[in-house]
Image 1 (cartoon, one colour):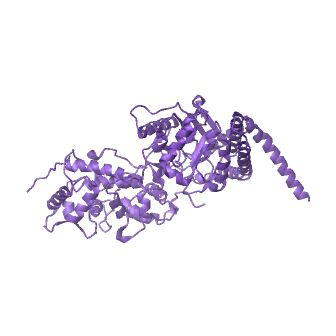
Image 2: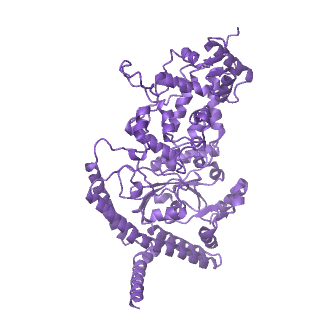
Image 3: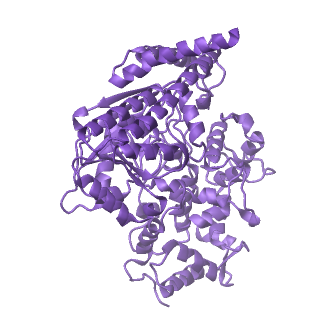
Amino acid sequence: MEGADLVAKVLSTWLTLVLGLILLPSAFGVSLGISEVYMRILVKTLEWATLRIEKGAPKESVLKNSASVGIIQRDESPMEKGLSGLRGRDFELSDVFYFSKKGLEAIVEDEVTQRFSSEELESWNLLTRTNTNFHYISPRLTMVWVLGVIVRYCVLLPLRVTLAFIGISLLVVGTTLVGQLPDSSLKNWLSEVVHLTCCRICVRSLSGTIHYHNKQYRPQKGGICVANHTSPIDVLILTTDGCYAMVGQVHGGLMGIIQRAMVKACPHVWFERSEMKDRHLVTKRLKEHIADKKKLPILIFPEGTCINNTSVMMFKKGSFEIGGTIHPVAIKYNPQFGDAFWNSSKYNMVSYLLRMMTSWAIVCDVWYMPPMTREEGEDAVQFANRVKSAIAVQGGLTELPWDGGLKRAKVKDTFKEEQQKNYSKMIVGNGTLNVESD
Amino acid sequence: MGARSSHAAVIPDADGIRRETGFSQASLLRLHHRFRALDGNNKGYLSRTDLQQIGALAVNPLGDRIIDSFFPDGNQRVDFSGFVRILAHFRPVEEEDPAMRDPKQPEPLNSRMNKLRFAFQLYDLDRDGKISRHEMLQVLRLMVGVQVTEEQLESIADRTVQEADEDGDGAVSFLEFTKSLEKMNVEQKMSIRILK
């Protein structure tokens, strides 16, 4: 059985390598520098590729479609100016021009829909999936691309899948074991160690390079941490640098097993689906959690859904009504190395994870920000908007007032009523009519 | 994996559409990109729900009328050529010598007449070529919501129809509509310029 022997030997050397080079250093939070070398080679290769593409691109047919520049010329004058009249003028047949133009402009380009699809890149990063506008350039580039495919699918993917598997099993086993201990500071310390190690392993399974800024503002116990949401990976990225209590729905399947195991070791806040509808219950439980100063800070994503990391959408006010100190965190991914956005209508969790594991790397910046509390006379909505602006400014994202829930639901009628009110004021003018009775 | 690139080859009958609408190749590619972004489940056509999902359109008081204009004759789907044909109405008018234009060719979609025709059918709910007082009332109601009383709205509708109506049939025909707007700079107000 020489073949089987050989396979067993290869497998065991493989596993020892993985253990020695990746798992053990993760347990101690130490880095061996292998991923830094990988990143440097990667950056050099991508720079070379960009130069080749720019040299080879024919002048007229390059379509730059960056997210920042709009594609239509906009006239942002308010309704009064657009309808060419002062307040109190009468209704004209031509009023319909203004609304139809605004409507058609929205059809051609609107700020919200583009946030639910992946950001387009300025230059190609040698992944097929981002190849929207770049044509065949040269044989050398194609060769590098083929090499990239081989490296990503045959070398990196198996490694990453192994690591992910090990990471998740360790998490489940570790937290179940720790959960058997009686409540004590030893238990808390052990659960922290287990969480941190497993998260570090999982981050390495995505070749994640994370830069943390302003670590002095890291969320403290008894506080609430809010961040912008791009993908489920956000949770992983934040928990690698500190332990949080998570809030969310109880899922079935693999997620459910992980959730049940984790809650044994340290108190996360999981809700049944029916409980989620009852806002008072949710607020009550969260209040109880933060009142206990020994419990870990809660991690909440107030947008409620995944946005493509170019903007921050409306923060739901629920998290800001609980009270307590809010610790904002801004997360910005670098799309050049891999797109972290989860387009849940296009990909399910498994294909999303596969896409993550076949990208080059996940590179992101995490900024911790000084804590904020609700001021006197500020209601929850204003507070939420204040925090949202702070996060948008820090992360270099645009700020949008729209609700992320627009992905799935229609917009509320109140916004339309506002426009109708404005228009009515113009043609009717506070109850008086400019009509001559004959 | 399907083709993700917006090559002209992917657009069906690109040349025909270009000739009919007058859009440049670059603009057409952008619009095709947009069409595919709006088409959430990759059906190849757009339905009313796809357009209703656009937030800025849903809050527009005339949003439903604008969406209706994409689905004439009871259709429930609009393909790319139908989509672009409506958008072509809003293409800015180029400076061109009217004498140079070939009179045998149909009028371009973005001519003044066609822009006015688009605005007219936003009012003309039953597409019978006339805006009756009743239709005027309904469209006005869309624009003002619940803010204005029924009597006020009726006076406005009556006045508007009276002013525009020339042959005294109590409704505004397309010709009367264009006559009442002859001084209006339609070309500028109903134009959307696509940047390259």
